[in-house]
Length: 156
Image 1: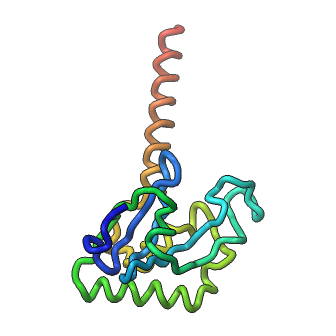
Image 2 (image 1 turned 180 degrees about the horizontal axis):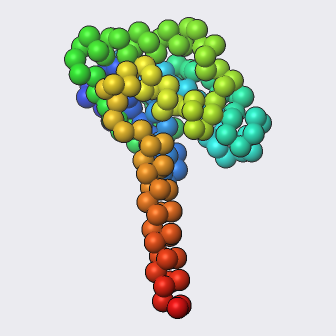
């Protein structure tokens, strides 16, 4: 796990939850993280359909608990101290007033990454993992279509 001395307050941090997905949160300082947590991490059948989880909540927890005995990585640092303070302010506000999130998890539109980038400011956030997955799927589909066309041409 990363040292808390190297993580700037207001940073988006992450830990691996599968081969392609990460769990993300906002480091608020003093060894604390605020994140939007889906308790089953996609391991159980969703109780609101395949994309939604009604049990997801915004929580504040220690960095160690966030890590779940794994490594924590830096995803994005605030551009300056003022930006970091604003990220923390937004995260704490969502924690105190979770109505926009609690019970409204959606794998595509309202997940931990969405929460973290909303707190961080989407204009400062790096490419989202959901965007990366969409790009990878588009490349795979395009490649499959091209390969099919090549095979169809050979059969003539």
